[in-house]
Image (cartoon, rainbow, N blue to C red; front, side):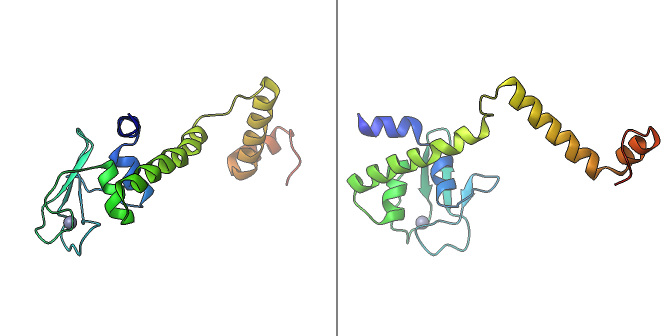
Length: 140
Ligand SMILES: [Zn+2]
């Protein structure tokens, strides 16, 4: 039940991002679990699993899921890895919220707009020149 819950929510990209890892265009990266000079670690986004093609890897040629990934990365037991996964999920939540605009009142929204355009005018020479020509603003 718990494992199912984690696997449904915690995707490979989230885990990779958490550990500061990134795949290349072929969804591969240098294996984080052994000395790897060429990218032998293949991530399968469709199944949310990964596989290391090197023979001297501690993943021992086994397909690994997000929980296995965390387990190898943290060098911990499966139970500890599950807790860590939950922590990562919790850690991701505020991140996601940040991307959404908070609910603003109309006046807050207009105040933000005003601030934005006021700064924009200040940073734009043509805008300043225009305002000066129309005598809408004194020279800065
Ligand atoms: Zn490896």
